Amino acid sequence: MNYINSPIEKIKFNKKELFVKRDDLLDKQFSGNKARKFYYFLQSDIKNIEKIISYGSAQANSLYSLSVLAKLKEVKLDFYVNHISSFLKENPDGNYKFALENGANIIEKNCDDIDQYINSILDEKMLFIEEGGRVKEAEYGIQILAKEINDWALENSIKNLKIVLPSGTGTTALFLQKNLSFEVLTVACVGGSDYLKKQFFHLEQDEKFHPTIIEMQKKYHFGKLYKEFYEMWIKVKNDSNIEFDLLYDPLGFLALQKVYDTNFVYLYIHQGGILGNETMLKRYKRKFE
Ligand SMILES: *Cc1c(COP(=O)(O)O)cnc(C)c1O
Image 1 (cartoon, rainbow, N blue to C red):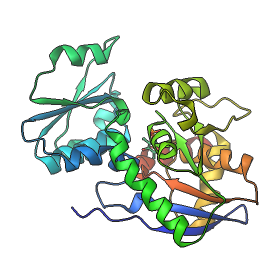
Image 2: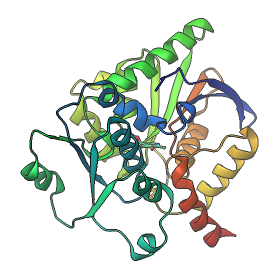
Image 3: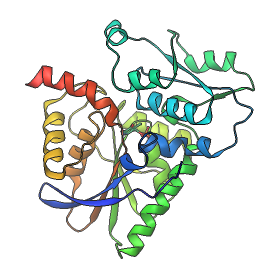
Image 4: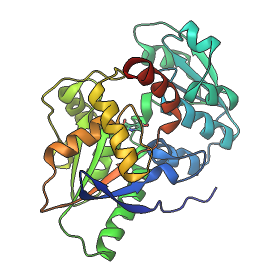
C-alpha cells in the first residue's frame, strides 16, 4: 500500500474560513486516525506474530481498522468486546459488519479487567494493542501527520495556525502537540476533561506537550444522541460537502465554534470513522425526524 500525504481543503464554517486535513481519504480501507496510529505496526516486521489482540466496543472504528491491519499483515485478529447486542448480531452493520467480513474474530467476554485477562493469555506469538490504539507506537504515524501539517504551513507561510480535533483517548491530539509548535486544541468526547487529562499524563509526563482542552458548558455522554450534534453535522455537511463522523466530530465543531478567533487560521483534522455513520444516522433519524 502506498501511503500518501492526505490533501488539505478549504471550506466555510459559520461563513468563516476553515482548512480540513482529509485523513479520511488516506486510503480506501486503511484511513483516519486509526491508520495513523497503527501505521507503525503496518510498517514493522511482525513475522513472528500470528495474532493481533485488542478490545473495545463492537462498533468501534478501531475494530474495523485492526481488521484491515490484520488482513494486510495476514494474521488473525481476536477482538474482545464486553457485549454484543442481539440486535447487532442479527443485523450486522457499520464497523462490526465490515470487520466480520475481514475475518475478525469478535469475542464476547464480560470481565472487570480486560487488560489483565488479555495479559494472562498473552504469548510471544500475539501482539496486544490497547483499546483505541492508546499505545506509544502510535506516535510514529502521528509524527508523519505532524510533518505533513508543518510542511503545508511553511509552504503557505501560515504562522498563526491552530489545529483542532476531537479526542477519545487523546492519543492523536497528544502526539500531534508533541510534534508541532502550533497550538493543538481538543475536546473530550469520552469521559470528560479530567479523564482526557489523565490520558495525556499516561502517555506524556511533561505538561508542556499537552494539548489545550476546550471546556464545554454542557456535559455530553459518548454515543448519546443530541439534537445540536445532529444539526451541526448536517450544517457542516451542507456547507462543505464533506461527510464527517457522527460520534466525535459534532462536538469537535461545537468546540471550534466556541473558541474560533478570526486572528488565527484553523486546521481541523478529519479523523475518518464514517463507516460507523450508517448506524448512527439510523438512530438519529428515528429520534429527530
Ligand atoms: C478513534 C477516533 C477518534 C479519537 O481518537 P483518539 O486518538 O483516541 O483521541 C476521533 N475521531 C474518530 C473518527 C475516531 O475514529
